[in-house]
Length: 390
Image 1 (tube, rainbow, N blue to C red):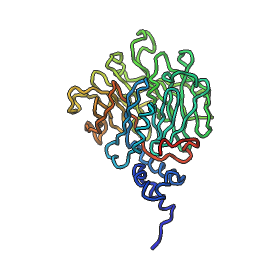
Image 2 (spheres, rainbow, N blue to C red; image 1 turned 90 degrees about the vertical axis):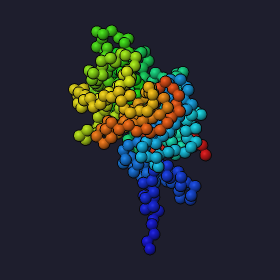
Image 3 (tube, rainbow, N blue to C red; image 1 turned 90 degrees about the horizontal axis):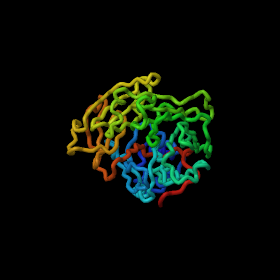
């Protein structure tokens, strides 16, 4: 009978989800050493990312105060056996009052007052990222936009900042591979409105922000109606001086009534259409969800795919109040005061409402952070990091 080599065994085990690997940690020395084995870490991350969709989500209060003492993790439907983190991980985030800013390829970007951290919730490792020198003395970072971007051999932090309330923002990029911040040549033009810098969306190599929609501008202003701005981030050291910020109009129907106090709009990554990744716009106004997808980037052409009243979705709750929403693989995921649901927007589960879980985030608004739980490629694992807990 032939015996299996260690490399063959590691290859097979690399297809296991992170949750299963953690459960096997105490069963043998081999399993306890898996998270520190470069070959295994690289393969497990690669195989997990082939699924190309999150397995679970974090839910946290959405506010600018340091009241981030409650965070929950819930698996998405069908991912109950493959998603999860060590029990003490959530406790650490809550006790440390870390505010989750973004999630990408199994990593979390978190903020504590004026300190930035990258956390891998699967391995419980944390890396402290020092801010650019001129920002280290600030009392808070609420007016600064920060998000996390990963590719096959590096991760980057992208930070937008301005000094004098102008519409032009400097773009600073931190590369783990280089271990330093760099200032990009081209500024980011935000327009006359305030952008929702806490809701960045990366698609096709560009970072996108939707503006606010409050009525503080006069009707004759060119920026009276809300809009989307994008900024290319993929060209790195070969940055082209001619690259400019791109302006995207939102649908005319979405602009109508956007100054209403009940209106909330956000943009999200949509599924691939004809082999091309596109974005969608979701508006909630007067308890009605409307969803559009961008069909032509150059001409800002949109197509409405769904309009539905919350009470017409089939919820059993009486007068449900929507606390937050996002989009995942053609589904609208939204939270009410105590529950999280998914509602199908495409043919596979069109108009099918499913309850995902109950939640305990008591807040006016909540944020949902979709994530894939995995071991990060060894080159992405911070060289200077600490184990969060034993």
